[in-house]
Length: 218
Image (cartoon, rainbow, N blue to C red; front, top):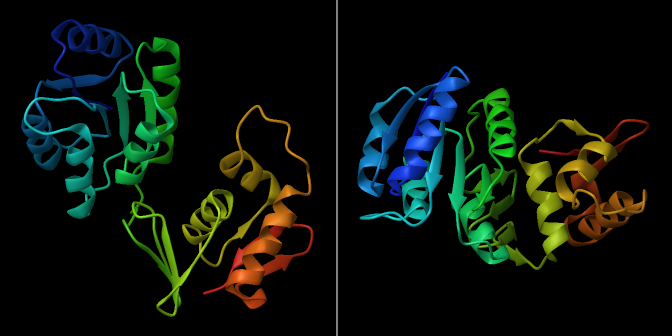
């Protein structure tokens, strides 16, 4: 597995390179945003570890440009910016995961392994299913051109379903990926929010597959 580390703090970059190489990865390092962008464009990498505050071009802009060019290299962002809106900005720009500094090296490795298992499926910046359009960066949903107002949880649920159009998604999977890990969530929470979405999008758009879960119709 070949990784690209884009980090301008020399000691951290060197430590990451040594540690990841010890785990069997081939690791290249870039120290600026433009250098990281060019390496990601032209190198055959399996994943990228990307700092946010970089000389020349921020990590946000690097991943935004890659996604605009339809390059789906898995990206794990690293940043000392630990605010919830900072993390949301990174994910909305197209990053796959976001880890704040200081971080646990064990957790970093686990998250990288998770990214590598998932691979690099196409992740369009605007999702379209039938007459539904969802723009993650602008937090905007439209149906047949008309804007639909959604709460944050409704938006997250629809986002997850729109990335799997026509597939049956179980309640357990939705709880694992849409609700907060470690929070005791009522078992009927998924049913409640599916009901909210049906009222706003039309009952026919979300099909219940008895004993299996839900399917967003196309």
